Image (tube, rainbow, N blue to C red; front, top):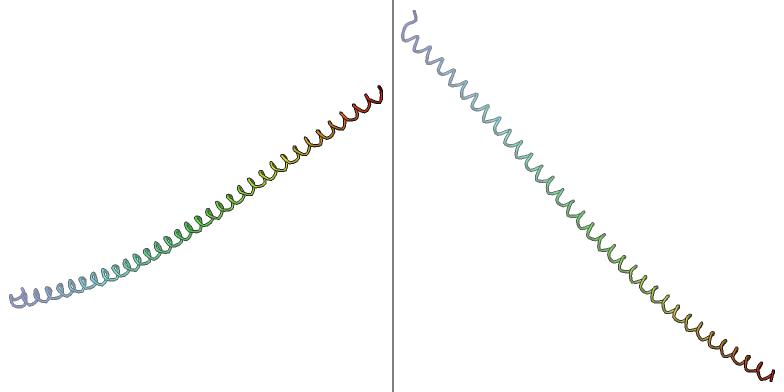
Length: 124
């Protein structure tokens, strides 16, 4: 049998070893937690950076889309105005041609009436 003093010394040595092991494991756990915390912070920062880049790209695309829509709207308005101008010109030309045709018709009617009158006077 082991003497009580030797048993107490052995128990103290075992306790010291277990305490040292526990302290070592605690230190390892803290180190792992610190590493994971650092990695998580890095990933969070990367995610924020990616989110910011995507937001900036989306804003750029939205601005480009708005600019293109404004340009297309301006072009459409210009084409509409051109079409209206062309329609107005064509209407004016058509009215002018109608007026000329009526004038020619009137001149021809007067000439025909004059010829008819001469023919009748010659026949009499």
